[in-house]
Image 1 (spheres, rainbow, N blue to C red):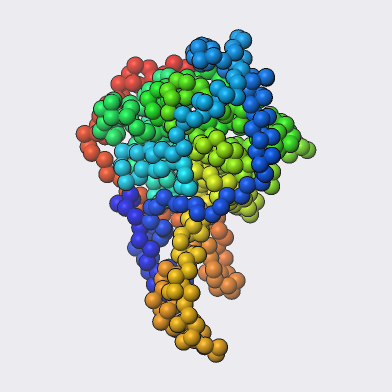
Image 2: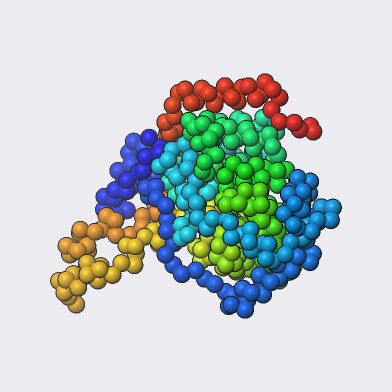
Length: 518
């Protein structure tokens, strides 16, 4: 089944691929929760941490954040904040007191408890691309997102063990009306995957529908669902200095029911934030902390994480840029500040490239390695993102999974172990100055699992590659994508639960879904 780990078995170097005669499914790493044992890169000294912290506190106490939700303003006013219309100001002591309630670590358990994911500490989790309105593949080019494309990306999300959670819609299915889109999408997500799922915080009705579907899928009572995290949401501020009505509403519903909220301001230096990276990070933190404070007032101890989506723009055109040196530093600084506040950290695997080419991979690799360096706990958009988030690509999804697997391998203790067996003095003595290590017993005992075996890279020389058709990386990824979709098997789900989900979807559709203005 697709939810069972695929065991790595190598049969002697590059020739091992010849074994794949009946299946186009790639060999991949088994499911695991990576642990980042590296010391984080921390660009800020103690004075720098305090400068950013004090700057964020002054924004919160002197300038304030606009909360465009009357209930949120009423709650914060009742907690002692200064509220003037929609402008809310809060003092440093109050902010830090509220942040002390937020847990530094928590676990989200989906319908399959074997896919539970720990958030925080040294864990790092990777998720699929989320929310592009368009999709692109090598054969059909760019086109508007649709439901069939959505389901294909959900299948890729389930298939790859290095993808730990199913974030938002990997592509928006524009062919389904917004009043019922969440119902069809969550039904497919909950039946085609058994991983942690996400709800868009776009108002009360959508959030409560998703919560009920996750509860049904897990076979839980309401009390069991509310007792611990089973799903999550992500909200974005409206930079600069605003939080909108529906996202705050959805976030507060999550907090009241102990479901995690990741708060991620989207601050582009030079556009929606100061042109300096420390200024942009300071603004981002103020916006994010303000919402987390609200959620701790709503329910002290509600699981939350602080996110970073701080990058820069091309000052010649105004276009967003990602995977830049500035993006990497902003991610590292936010990771450092997240640890200062004792919060789990979210960042992203992003790029500005339009197709899965060299630019796409170096920008995404920069983003992913910045996540590693920053001590990020959850990486959004880690596989499949193109055109600054406007395109989802299956080829890019697979190419990114290869990078993610390399990061996972990099973190395995085998790559830096120093036991006597690893130091290998006996093998060094056996081979001496005139032999080679291919045939010695130490190598023979370990060669199958000694090194990372790529999903999509071709390590043959030019002549061999050319003789085999000269297939470029994206072309190999396209063929792998088609094979995965053709052979996909959904994870098991109890028929009665599946039917109950279908009945819920049908009932909510008959009731008209959620209100829209179109």
